[in-house]
Image 1 (cartoon, rainbow, N blue to C red):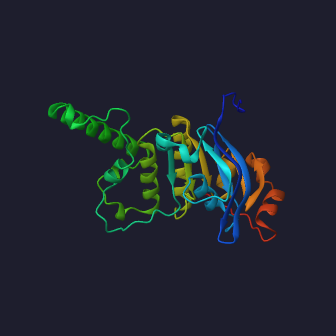
Image 2: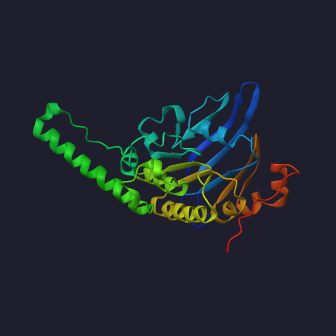
Image 3: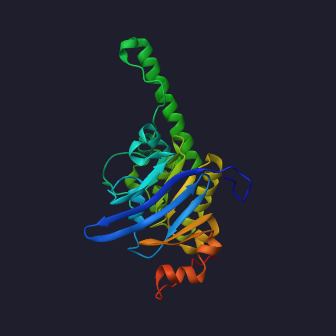
Length: 270
């Protein structure tokens, strides 16, 4: 398959006939779509439309009633080591703000050493040399990730002292510390002011180009989605429409997705 820019694309994520119940209520019904490599796709819809439920089912965090999900060509339940190629930023990163962990330490938790996993049986000197080398590689990867997200100056701060926008950048660095192919964001800009959200979108698009990421995000900001995303899924329990922003976000489609009470959400920029 070839994109509008002439690049060869292929499905990163396939969802077919996904239905999820919450108790006796249908949260998501018969949802099917594909996510092509290198694209930035937004899920939009009203509160209670099933957006977060859809993402959590895709990540295999909640059970599904029916349907299939494949990521990187494999069923989600059989991803194995490929799961490390998937990054996730939740809407609310809930933690104890008094917990003494620094930005450096948090981002370092996302680092996974590939391949070489020597043991002490291979010799004390060899083992400790390997351990020292891995620690150096980890430190370098953490520093680079923080620099690329403009958060390096925060490296020694406790995460409990960060503002909402700063924490989002640190979580993005966590996703960046090892190579990823798919990044899933659940309202990543919630709690961030207008300028902070605009800056974050610009950074996300820059990193997407550099890293070759495929992005799936939930957003309530229709204007930001129309400017920065390649494709849109309009969801209200089931998919109402899908396509390029200029098609999916037409007044008729938004009305069908959000009901007659819909009032378009605009950001006003100076």
